[in-house]
Length: 283
Image (cartoon, rainbow, N blue to C red; front, side, top):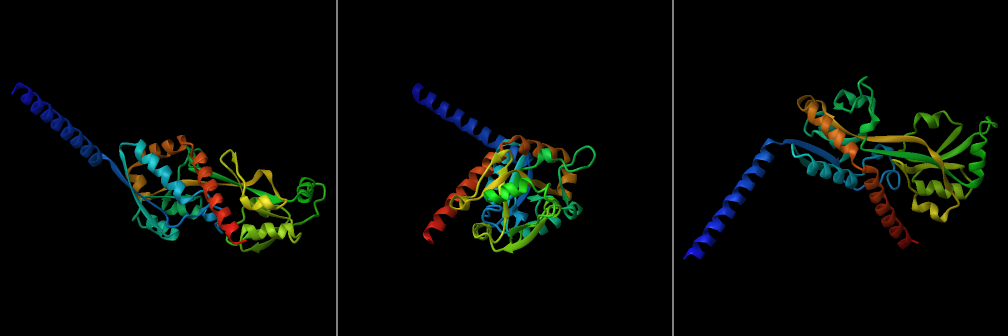
C-alpha cells in the first residue's frame, strides 16, 4: 500500500511539474513578439543559376535557416514564415502584411522599409546578413591585359553579362563594351570561343572564396579582389520597427554574430553540385 502511494505521489508530482513547464512555455510564447518573415517561393542560387543579382544574398533556403536559428536564439521572438513570389514579399512589406524580408539595399525602399543604420543614419554594413563579391572571370590573356589596363588606357574590353544582372557603379567606370547573354554558362562559352574577354560572377561570400562548377572545363579564372560587393540585409517594415525598436536592434546584432557566410557557402556548394549532376545528364 505504501509503495502504491509513493508511486501515485511520484506520478502526481510529475504531472504537476509537466503542467508547470507547459504553462511556462505557453506564457513565454504569449509574451513573445511575432515577426512575419517573407521569403522567395523558389530555390534560387544567387548568380550561380539565377539571372538577376536582385536575389544576390537572399538565397531562400539559407535565409530560412538563418531566421530559424534566430528564432531559436531569442526567446522574446516568435517567427511566422510566409513563402511567396519575391515581388509579393516586397509589396506585402510595403503594406505591412509582413514584417521582414532579406533584400539588398535600394534607396527607394527606405520609404517603406527600415535598414540597420549607424549613428549618422548611414547604412551599417556590420549588420548585413550576407555579403557576396563578384569578380571578373577571364582567361590568362585577359588577366594580363587587365593588370596593364592603366598603361594602355585606350584598350576596351568586351564583357558578357547574364540577362537581368544590374551593373554596379564600378563596372560603369571601367572600359567595357557589354554584351548580354542568357546565362553565365553562355558567357563562359563566349570567352572560350574568343568572342568576349570576360564575364562577371560570384567569387566570394564574406571572406570565403567560391567558384562555379562551369569553370572547371574552361580555361578561365576569377580576378581577385572582387570588383564589386553586394550585401543582403534583414529589412523591417516601418511599422514593425517603430513598435519594436529595441527588439529590432537585438535581432540585427544576433544575426551579425552568426557565421552566415559559412551557411551560404554550404548551400551554394549544394546547389552547385546539383546543377553539375543535371548538366552531366544532358551531355
